[in-house]
Image 1 (cartoon, helix red, strand yellow):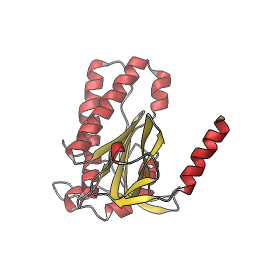
Image 2 (spheres, one colour; image 1 turned 30 degrees about the horizontal axis):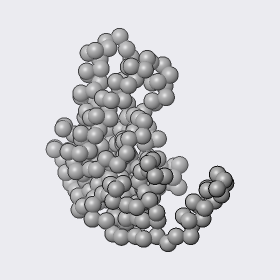
Image 3 (tube, one colour; image 1 turned 180 degrees about the horizontal axis):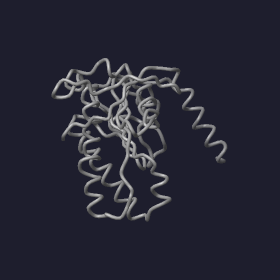
Length: 231
């Protein structure tokens, strides 16, 4: 069989097969799904945490320094996510994706964003300054959050495959990470409206989120925050 015939057969099979879908009760692992048209549907909240200006970081600093920044940021973000009940679904270079399910999924994701901001401002950057007193580099980052129904399938080939998350939340959460790191936490109105008071207000009753218009996404309302919450 030629390569063209092989590829044609594979694509024909994908489009010809009907989906075998089921409702998910937990965040699936790749092993939970077959490589064929097998899928899980669930309602989830997606969080993306993205290191800002990573291209400039690798272009302007030595690889060893850049790698330490990546490791410090992703390590802290991962620990926060797990502490808030999120499930890490992928690492992609300078970013991490996580999914939250359950009744408090939006509040847990929002708390994660505020705590990730704490680790950057109160832990990573002070230690960075301690070990590299002469550098002007400071870690900046953005967390994006949205919630929606998700369609989860296993994609790739045998021996090299992973899950693909199809749904608004995965797309919008990733896009929010392109917004200004001057406001490290961004959340859609849909997710914001489902936050509990602990995720909205500080300990002294101040609202931690500000509503703004996302001009590049049809003028939809989103919320942003500069606040942090202690881990």
